[in-house]
Image 1 (cartoon, rainbow, N blue to C red):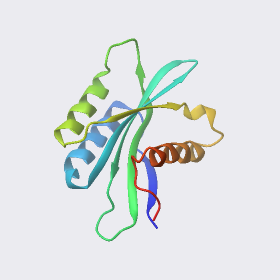
Image 2: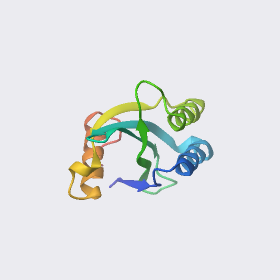
Image 3: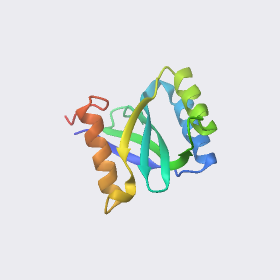
Image 4: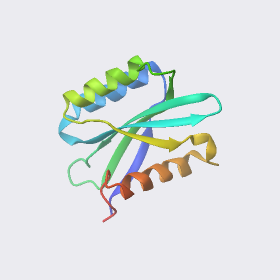
Length: 130
């Protein structure tokens, strides 16, 4: 059975560079990229994520994420989002933008990630369980 798991890199500026490096060095395995938008009382936040096909005969599909580390202020596109989009497009992936609940609305971050996987599967953005 295919196991889809989020691997959190963090939300800092350097973490976005790590995600970009993962995308460019693993381009043949890149399945899809995502920009998740979240709102709470503090404002609008972005999460950047990339899903990769399993390596070799593995049944493990990693989804690397920088969770809610970028605050969206007004209509200006944050520099980290722009860098991520440029890298994804360069590797042939147009990031899918999906509005989601903020992770603070969940009792545990694991439930938050299950919620996202469910949305991605329902929209055929991730392969179904086999």
